[in-house]
Length: 375
Ligand code: ASP
Image (cartoon, rainbow, N blue to C red; front, side):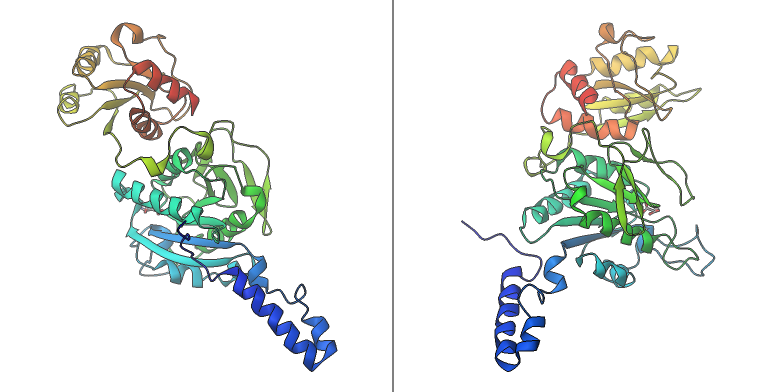
């Protein structure tokens, strides 16, 4: 059996060292020995959970020219070790260690980068000396990366993703408190088995439901059915649980996935250009998420082009661009007749990831739709 790699100095030698120190002190002074008994002198560090913080860039690693630049700045500039060093309060709740995997704005994530991050987290959570993983991430696509992780990581250990809306150089930068709160959440035994969590603005969100709702405000992350909980004065308080299967309860395992089948999104609006859909039939796409108006509605002049997409072999998934609500099969559209399928309540961008994962398991449209409704 190969010994798993460790990220933190072994706990055992530290405890043994404490024991040896106590024995030496006992010989020197019984009073001192009492203070330094193995239990009493067990170092704080040994009692605290070990958390690896993976840095990926984003505004939490951003820097502006002046403190009043809250929206005008460069993201992905500051190394994760520096971000960690700026929040020494975290040391009170956990032993933290940084690891830089990327230095990018999250708008630049692609499937390869998401898989690389997910696989690294999967390695880390398998290590016995890692109790939780945190990821500093740009806020633009936090909802996508975290949903992928939520669906594919095989762990009960807390995995917490955080970002910031203001760079560290700005007045009222939100990154430091988000980071501290995320550490509080990641260090809490209560956070185990709740799936991948996104902690922003004192709230704990499920990766399944969270979405960025505002381009600038600190209060931007919303969950369709509300956050799972809040962080108040260094304590997480949970009020609800995710109802949909996640992490250990899904059929997707990041360790088995080497690539994600290509899935594209088309955003519906008035006066669409149907010729754009033609590209989908010849660019290697396996499925198209049609982010329709209202209940995933298809304009009369888009029906034929969309039928053509399906006939070319590309799976057509109707979603809604409204941001919430289930898409009703065979409601206003002839899904059975056209062999189109529908999402449940997922946004087009989340449906893209889930459809891609589903395609790693089946090509059957009915089965893919079941998966879309399950998760
Ligand atoms: N564009 C940045 C990103 O997503 C914005 C942010 O982090 O808030 O990386």
